[in-house]
Length: 230
Image (cartoon, rainbow, N blue to C red):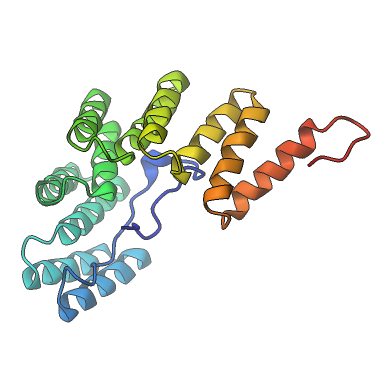
């Protein structure tokens, strides 16, 4: 499932991102999808009260839907960040837990709950949550990618790299992990290895113009004077 404008490994600030999801076609009735779509639109306009109202209506039409719980959590989370209301942060966390109780592999929710904990200076809890997700979903590379992002923000590139390697052991063609690993190696001053990672990502999915631009720039920067970069 793709989480709307969810962050890619090339995006700058993992801990500041909250993505709202549309209701899956198979998970809601037409009216529920309509309420979710309207809620997403209001959220994007900054009308958080209106968004909450529509997400609540969608939840009433489809009780227990994890996307509805997540959308409510993300909206309260955003309100808490913007208006400094601790009660909204608590409500957001409750909705995230309700979402994960119904779908433990809801990637946007796992990410958002970890973000919330980091914002509340509960980094150890965020790491433990993502590690538990990795243990319970051994065939899913996503927990390792999120752990890599967290460790990278904590200034621990070695642990970040280890988790990306774990993700690629599970899914060698995971473009998110390949691009993130390329970024780590580029930052570490290893452009040739970064190009290899970026190129592998492009071989899997060539529709990544930003990654293609990085490859071109790095090849140009490392070309021997008087030669043509390939």
